[in-house]
Image (cartoon, rainbow, N blue to C red; front, side):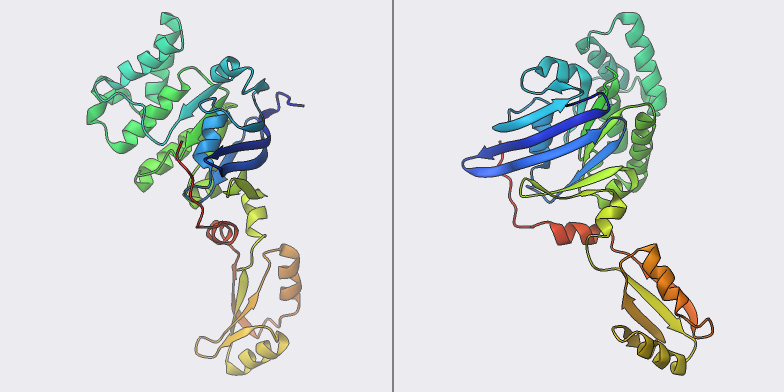
Length: 313
């Protein structure tokens, strides 16, 4: 049963084109007031999922509820509860920033007094006030993307879909957009994010789903996903060659590098195993220690099939 604590609830969602399954039995739940990131290679079904959940595309099978409303039977209520920022900007380049926001206020049926306050507040919040009366065609890529997201928030949606929102942005513009997302979530907005920037998911998301072949290959927090794949290790630096040989004997499965005076051994990233390792070391034998855990790059490569190809709608 969907409650107000669940912004999205999906069960058995399916979509195919010409016999090719783009979404093949997707199940996921997104708590309200959180950021959920959907990762996956090109063609994994990320954009199709967003289009179905935002009522832009009908599913072949399964159920989806947004803010408690059924996507199929209560589409109007769903649309009133959400905002969508797609891969391609919805900004009209011939209008000014302020005019673009006013247009969205008119489409959202905001009364004139409320619309004026919302528009001015968003211009300030998105650092666009100084350029508010310039045509959007003169904006930089980062400014256009900020305006695009501001337009999505004019109607004060409870849930925002961001479909690869920072593609093509420079690092500073990307970080500015991340800050805006964090501020929105702090105010109670739920964000459903698709991205191919693994750092973006790591920095923003409370939970991450890895989509491959239309199914969730894995789901969890960033830390939980990193523990799913091998690749973590501990590197110990020995005081001298004699201590290096001693460490190699102590850890038979370790790899020794005589030139660097280091020993590398597998590590699962858990604090318990690290404590056990440290307890067995002689302080005089080791002069340095480095711990590397698997990152989201490792998770992505281990869990996804790069041969996937989504059939366009």
